[in-house]
Image (cartoon, rainbow, N blue to C red):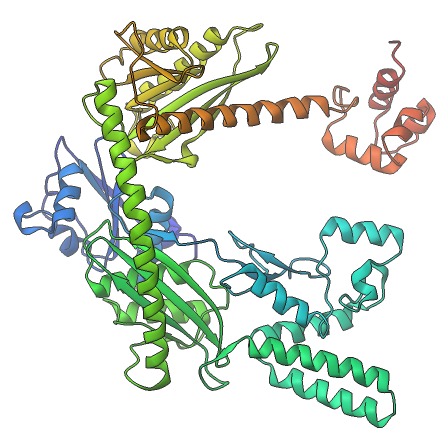
Length: 638
């Protein structure tokens, strides 16, 4: 997706904000394509939409709430301001909308959750000698990905078969460099599963040709590979090189087994994706089969949380955005088969054509093999939604019960939808750090986690360190809540429940900070003592009794343990950095670049320590003053 440039597209940003959402003055909203954003009283974006005509679309929201769908009415009721960004055309509006949703994660927009992190077969085209490996998660630009596969072992089995025919490297970069220094290949070379690029056993041109054939095979072009192996086997046999012919025979058998693992569903000239959707009022499950050269080369599944009121056509549009805004592992297909056409078919076809560079059609299969395949994909989606319902019903109900029970036990006015927990970590008063972890709706919100270096505490004083961390965090909140919405930073939203790791002492510190800053009516404070898992709150001498097996106590324990882990990890990182500091770090005039060059040219740290002043001054790029400073530092009396 291209970045949106305000100068290129001549965007104008307009805003209308009052204590409650009102219709902007007539004529202020342009009759142009763009994206609009509704914001709450904290300035947080709660909904992002797109429109071919902003004036017409936004006008639909300013009507009698009784005539609006339930979730839309709830969104308008919570919104305090609306903004819009004008762009050149509807395709740009689509791209901008997706970008803003990814950035702000609005609560009233559709939310996607992958039902699992699917493994892919990755070929690292960005490396000098590309390697094949199994990966999950984010994809690195420039590499080639094949899949996703249902199980990692399915990829490894296929890759093991293909390495006998296309012996590209699979080792890590460290192992490659290690054998390159040794001048001796690893075991994979000896069993003919690697061509040995680390020791020069294969030329760059031959390796590139072999890699190209492998990529073609993985992309579905299998006939050429089979024909070439059959030809090589016949030639070797005719020349009575029977040992070589046997190798080609084994490679051909491996290739046939790899081909058989790919389901054939069409002709060899067909490239298309098949989308299956099953939905209810709140959620939908999506399954996608990737078909290339007539074979199913991968599948993917995710669930959609329908936070907005979506018709089936709108849901298809959102699914297409999710599938093709992100990097498609097998590239854009010639056809996308969907259960129902999106609400703006031409818009999405134009956008996919831009992605692919040639015509792309979005179709609903009516009969034949493609219709049967979509029915299969839809059955997969139905099974996925059934599994997700069982899991989500349990998880959602448990979290809701835990938050409601915690509200009742602590005597809070409302359920704590945002909980923050703080912990301190140090080693005998050194490298003092604090952690802040966040839970929203009972789930960790890791993007909101924060770490603090304690600046004003000397020695071992947990109370003073806790006071500094809480003061910094809450003062930032007070400063940022007064800022315009577009200038608010990472501390702009307060916790409804603030938990400190500790008993009455830590609770007293937190109360003092909250009271001094005038936030006692806005933030509820609690302390969780680890020894007996006792919860202390303001105004009660005795701890609050929360039943041991209750989900509410487990929730507090989880966030307390997470804050402890987060603080310890940060402290460990700082301590490791301090322990691995170089003796050259404090030399005046010797920055990181010069330091690295000095160590490299002299042949290591030991060589720098043994160098005399003349050796250092002989380096033309190193100033004499810096050479003298290095020598003095190394030979300073201890």
